[in-house]
View 1 (tube, rainbow, N blue to C red):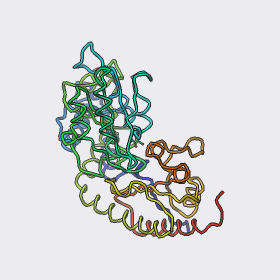
View 2 (view 1 turned 120 degrees about the horizontal axis):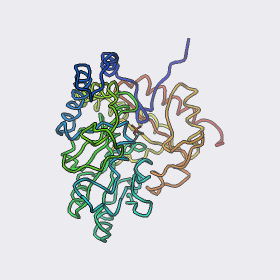
View 3 (view 1 turned 45 degrees about the vertical axis):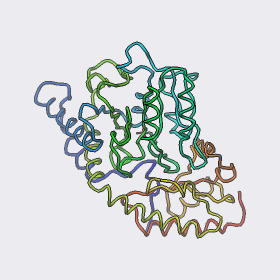
Length: 381
Ligand code: PLP
């Protein structure tokens, strides 16, 4: 009999929710292009617009503030543009990104490298708002500021609305990468006071390769990244991913309907998980004392390297990631932990477990047992 597997990598991606699967299967044979005027086209458009309404309701926005994209990466890249329509011929001069942003945001979008400045975070991983105030007050022209809602590695939640007040006071715009917050904490674009916000379907049980940018004000939009066709009110050219969008809408509807119970369930499991992990003496949990997503735990033991731990967990049946970027099989030190001033000794061992609404106590017990076993290994390799 195959060994049971436990999936603890929900921040990387999630299993497809049954509602999303059903919604996608139901529209697979819709033949029309949403831009076509005939009945087939109108049927496709209706599917896209129904999902748009779901996103709008969830985000406290109007349907016309939603632009579908190919995912969170494209939504971020679209927002990180010095040219916004309402600014006409006066582009933004600077991009300020927090040091803990996703690499896709740190890359700076359409800004040139010399226009990008890094906003430091405190030892707790929270954006330093006093530094933000100073940076903005120093002049240098109007700025776009990017601050994520919650970090994908640590789960630490950022004071986005406070940042928005500061940014707006200085005449700037705020973009919020809310990809990891969706389905794990309640928020609307109004709560965050964001000028733009990015979302991704595959983090909430939707399909991979579809996302959205939500505009805080319909009249304030970044210039399109993809130009040509008039789709998405001329904001994003290209035939819409009708099937994917249907799946996104269904997944989001399901996630919002269960938001509070899902949060409570994940938080309860995470408490049990962390108690078990910390039963191994020396285990350090990052960001434990600050506001975090209810599903994420990033932890480490100085004697154990992340690569070793991930392989050992995998052999014991648990799928999890390092908190670090992993390229070509090599675990690189996490830029998030480096920005928090965590010692390399602790940072190179950081491993992330992220739970989902379908995670179970049995899975948590399995992982804790694997951690106990691993910690008893005699030497560090
Ligand atoms: N932003 C954050 C915080 C993420 O965690 C991710 C996905 O890992 C992305 C953006 C990119 O989203 P997508 O995979 O939809 O391109």
